[in-house]
Amino acid sequence: MIVVNSVSGLRGKLDTLKPSLLGFVPTMGALHEGHISLAARAKKDCPVMVVSIYVNPTQFNDKEDLKNYPRTIQSDIRLLKKHLRKNDIVFIPDDREIYPEPGTRKFSFGSLDRVMEALHRPGHFNGVAQVVSRLFEIVKPDIAYFGLKDFQQVAVIKSLVRQLSMKVRIEACPIIRESDGLAMSSRNRLLEPDIRRRAPVIRRTLIKAAEMINTKDIGGIRDYVKKTIELEKDFEVEYFEIADDEKLIPVSDRSEMKRDKRYYGCIAVRAGRIRLIDNIEITLA
Ligand code: PAF
Image (cartoon, rainbow, N blue to C red; front, side, top):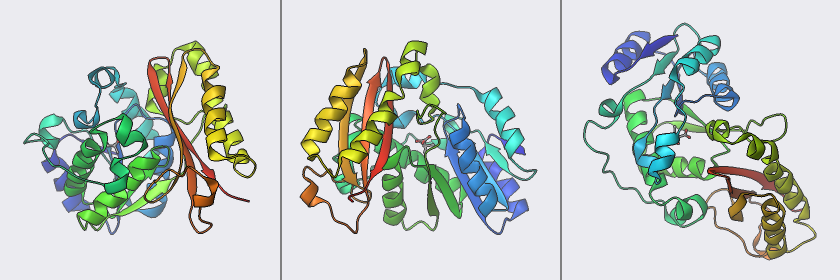
């Protein structure tokens, strides 16, 4: 595995390797099995991959969240060493490499800008689009891999690629979970032990909500999700919506759901000081 810190270093290596297909796994570090599953997919598909580690300041709408975001670069490198091949590249740039000029690009994602994460984290997806478009320009991957825990992010990135007519294929990969059901996330390590122990309530409640779709109206399911999760001390539901997987327009009644579309129940929960997101596919019988 090769570690590089600069754009010129990265381009130099890639120009020498000239891979027939280049995979790309962008990350913000604090790596876990979810990231490793993306790298495993890239390894299966592509003779060379780039994994980037960069905590992008422009996607944090909350300064404290940026300050507290876990940074574990040495253990990230050790973990990647176990999974990457000789010619795979770990790209760890600093702010000057990514933003030689301040990130001022403005994007618009239509309905995706008006729902769920976009409403609760203003500016977040513009920041994600700034860094992902910049990383795509630098790395020039054929295939890029993203986890479906960040369900809306995947839809935003697909839209970004269409808007900029980029050639990269976006692969959306399944959520990887802890053995108790909690979706893996870099932020899980920031959970206080008592909150961490009770956090699987989110997954359990989503499973129940998905089962309820054939017997209860959507308002009733929403109430159930909110009440059940908020029974736990210090847990607060920011939103729970059932939305299609393209435009992510929330449905308010089962009659709006079409059989030829896929729907997901998407949730954001404040668990103590940490914000967690998760989702589940919802299918009508
Ligand atoms: O999902 C993430 O970790 C980040 O949003 C990404 C895609 C690496 C951009 O900073």
